[in-house]
Amino acid sequence: MARDLESIVSDIVKGTGERRVLALDEIQEQFAAVVAAAARIASPDPARLWIWVADRVGTFGQSVLDAFYPLFATTTDPEVKFLAAVILMRFGSREALPWLLNVASTAGPFQYEATLHLGRMRVPEAHAVILSQLRSLSLSNGDAIAAMLEVWKLTGEPLPADVLARLRSADAASSVKVTLDSLGLGLPETTDP
Image 1: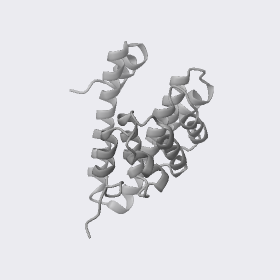
Image 2 (image 1 turned 120 degrees about the vertical axis):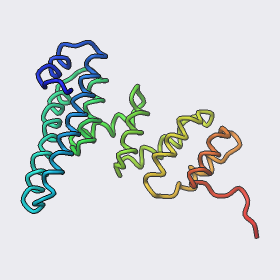
Image 3 (image 1 turned 135 degrees about the vertical axis):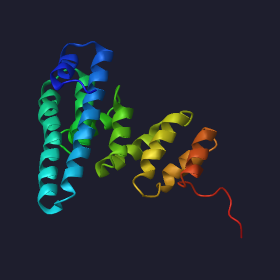
C-alpha cells in the first residue's frame, strides 16, 4: 500500500541518505502510476482529455525546473551545481548549458562526466568538446576513450581522420581499437580487393 505524500516528503526532508533515496524512488513510482492512470482515463475521449493530461503532466517537469534552477544559480558547492545543471538539462532547460560546456572544456573534477552527460543528451554544442577529449585523452586510458566513442556514436557523424588515425595508432590500447570496430566508427585495418 502506498504511503501518503506527507510522510514521503518528510523522509526526503528529514531522513538520512538511504531513506531519502528510497523516498524519492517511491515518489517516482507514484508519479509513474499517476501518469499511467491519466493516460487510461484519457482513452475514452482523447480530444479533450489528452489535452488535459498533457497540460497537467507537463507541469511536473516545470516543478523540477522551478526547484532546481535557483539551486543551480546560487550554490557554491561545485558538485551540487553540476548535478543541478544535469537535472535542468534533462528536463529541457538550456539555462545551464553554457556552464556545463565550460566545465566539459576545462580540466577539473567534472570535466569527463560533463562531457559524457552532454553527449548522451545529444547536445550538438558538445561535439567539439567530445572531439577535443578524444584528441587529448591518454591513449592508454581505454575506458575513458571507449566512453567518449560511445557518446560520439550518438552524433551520427564520422570521426575526423586525425582522431581516427590517433586512435588506430600502435600506442592506443587494444580496447580502443575493439571499441572503434564494435561501434562501426573505425576504418577496416585492411580491405579485400
